[in-house]
Amino acid sequence: MNNLVDRFLRYVTFDTQSNPSNLRCPSSEGQHTFAQALKQELIDLGLSNISLDDNGYLMARLPSNVDYSVPAVGFVAHMDTAPDASGYNVKPQIVEDYQGGDIALGKGDEVLSPIHYPELHNLHGHDIICTDGTTLLGADNKAGIAEIITAMAHLINNPHIPHGDICIGFTPDEEIGRGADLFNVEKFGAEWAYTIDGGPVGELEYENFNATNADVIFHGINVHPGTAKDKMVNSINLAARFQMMMPADETPECTDGYQGFYHLKSAEMSVARSELGYIIRDFDRAGLEERKAVMQRNVDRLNAELHKGHVELKLTDSYFNMKEMVEPYPHIIELAKQAMIECDIKPNITPIRGGTDGARLSFMGLPCPNIFTGGYNFHGIHEFITIEGMQDAVKVIVKLSEKNRTQLPLIL
Ligand SMILES: [Zn+2]
Image 1 (cartoon, protein in one colour):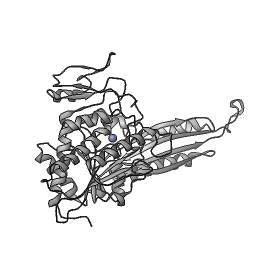
Image 2 (spheres, rainbow, N blue to C red):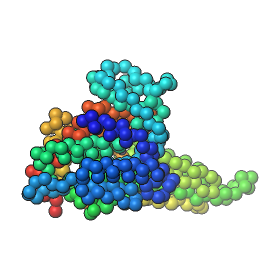
Image 3 (tube, rainbow, N blue to C red):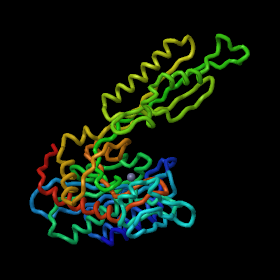
Image 4 (tube, rainbow, N blue to C red):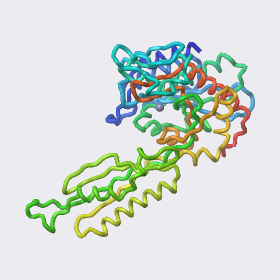
């Protein structure tokens, strides 16, 4: 397991921050450099079918070691780190046997404190890897990569553990929403997979939001204000009225759990033309459609009152709840739950109030729930992970690989 920490500490030295303004894939050179280093590591480990394509997708396979047919299972993680915080010159610190209280991050005043992150109270006695307060850590998702590769190494070194074909895939640009775009599901070869990209130990996720972007455009008429009577239509006023028609308590700051929302995330205003940018989210597909209908009705009501000017609504679906693609194959979830229980880990099934690459992959024909990495506070300088949590993730990947051999190939 020492290899696990060594791997992780080595991986975080690669700056793989993705760049949303670069339309190429991968969106940053660092991801390419990291992918090449990983590829060499997979070769050295002796994995099969290793391929790194021009878009930075790295895939490999650990062949079955049993003489009967077992469905191929996959494990997926992403190589990039979030644009929200720097991933350059990451200098991790290891706090062994954490005994509570604040952890100083680097030289400044920055601390990792249980006052802000009460989950630290549950981690007394654990070895914590955190940042020096100047960058993110990159546990999201290099911990997932280190855990998957360590699990493969463990299976190679312990050939008495029976398993079927295991497909592993490392993707670029997940943090900018493009990780699934160029993923070749057929080439990957698994019947289903798990992203190892979740948070605290036990996390298991197979439900995420259905998501639509809604842009509302208000066309006004601009006239000199001194002579505007009965002529001007101020689109800023129309936009303000529209927002007042939206349900005030169905917003991100007023909802949690399984509740959906409308979120006004941007506004561009001028007298002649204004545009409000919303995202709408709902776990239920019918609920999402109803939210779209509410917006359309409000647009229609406003238009019906207008003699001049008008309002238009542009709706663009962005992703859907993977639940509908995963639920028909209950053994995918059951296996993960059982694997955790056999590793003395209590499964914690929670809905994702967002989207994942796994959701996109699920709709591309690769059902793909998400499993914990053991990390916390992703995307910022307070990101940390425990060595114990990473070891638990490795155990679950090994156990899943082993347990899968007894599953019938239920996927049609
Ligand atoms: Zn991630």
